[in-house]
Length: 213
Image 1 (cartoon, rainbow, N blue to C red):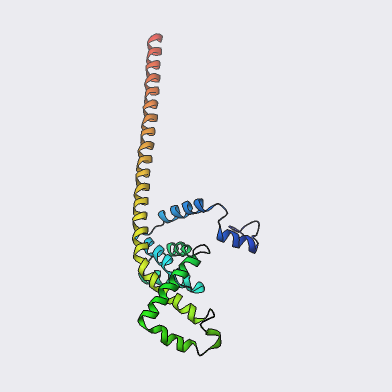
Image 2 (image 1 turned 60 degrees about the horizontal axis):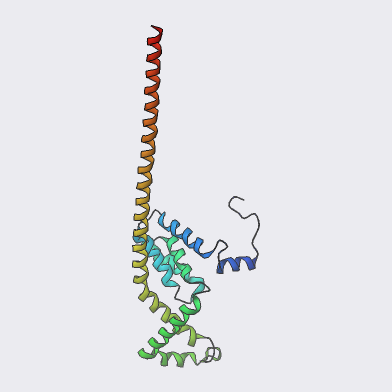
C-alpha cells in the first residue's frame, strides 16, 4: 500500500523510536517547527492547540489525554494537529517529573482544603486502596494536582507558542520576500543580457546589409 513501510518495525523498535526518534531529537524538533509554521490556521488557534496538548500532559489519564485535547480543541476551535504535537510534552522522559510535581501540588491542595481527610476515610474502605499502595490515595492527588498545573501553566504555554509562531512566520515571510526580490533581480539580469544580445544581433545584421549594398 501507498505510504506503508516496506520493512515493518518490531515492537521493540517502535518503543525505542517513541522514546528517541530515529532521525534524532534536534532534527525531529526542526521538522515539527516547520510543520507548525506551514499550518493554514492562525497563530492563535495553533497556539491554543499546542497549549492544550501540553496542559493535559500533566494529568495521569494516559488513554484519555488525546481525547481531552480533542474536546478542548473542538470547543475553542483550536488546531487539533497542534494539540497532538503538544501532547508530546508528556513523554517517558518527562512523565516522572510532571507526575511528581502534580502529586505534590495535589496533596498540598487536598490537605489545605481538608478534602484529604474525607478522601482517606472513603479510600480506607477498600483494602487495595490503602495508604501504602498506589491506589486512589496516590492517584487522586496526582489527578487533582495535574489539573491544577494544567490550568496554571496553560497561559504560559499559550503565550510562549503564540509569540514563537508569530516570530517564526514573520521571519519566513521576510525570507520569502528576499527570495522573491532575488528571483526578480535574476530575471531582470537575464532580460538585460537578452536585450544586449538582441541589440548586437541587430547591429550585426545592419552592418552586413551595408556591406552588401
